[in-house]
Length: 254
Length: 65
Image (cartoon, rainbow over all chains, first blue to last red; front, side, top):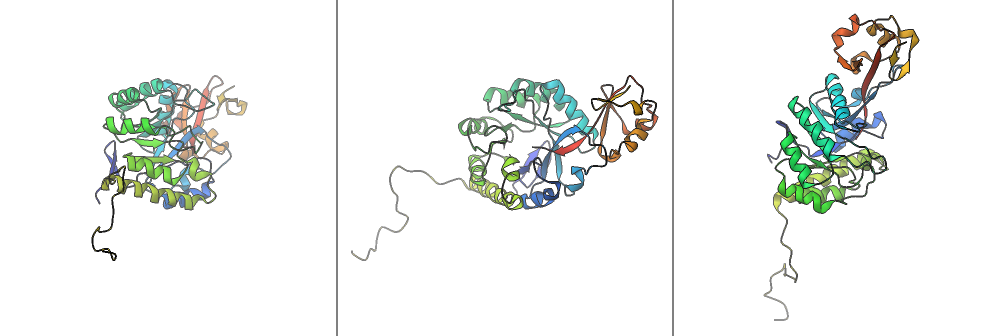
């Protein structure tokens, strides 16, 4: 099936974006491979001195790196982190994350829009993490985003599709890929949002806190593929009353 | 003395940045440097001498979501 996710002119066959936080470097390769992920997120931080291992040495060749701007509290800081990430020589993709609430880690849509506009003009492929608000999503489109990444639930909670109805509005109204990011805790939830028409799912904590990380990565891959296939197949109708699946003639008692 | 990654580093003063990076055990191929607020191209590491007034950030990628 020729069904590709296109972000900033780049084509992907996988619709599962994998986060790389909270688990050991040794498991990253297996997680990426079992997830079938072609995009993996990273964070930028002060470097470790003393010869510590670097995550880039554990990511399989050919996987697109998606640095996030976690730690940014406003647009200016997000732009600074994005530029430093690009200087690391790993491409033009950036996931904008602007957060100034430490309890729920909810994104600041206004500052996110400002950062998106600046970075899109500088040639970045900008994927903004946002609270699912239609007006903000439209502003992100106008600012040059390559996709919109609404949250399902607060980061790291594994609470699932708390914002389901508002994500559906974005899927229906926004003419960019909608990548559901944050809060998806189970493969069934990833499948559901893909059935709704999301273009992709991003998950980190659900995988990283699973009992078996590679196996959960595989389960998410299958669920996302199933949901996408179901979306393309168009789900069957829903009725109030029963509708027999078997023939209504030729019964043995007739 | 120079501030590097938020800490005073007296032994860095007067060193070439490229030398400091190696002596401190950073992985030169995996870092980016912000030098007094500006991104410093890798080609400039060898011609930059750390001064006591410098504020330097050295960053790398880590796991994140």
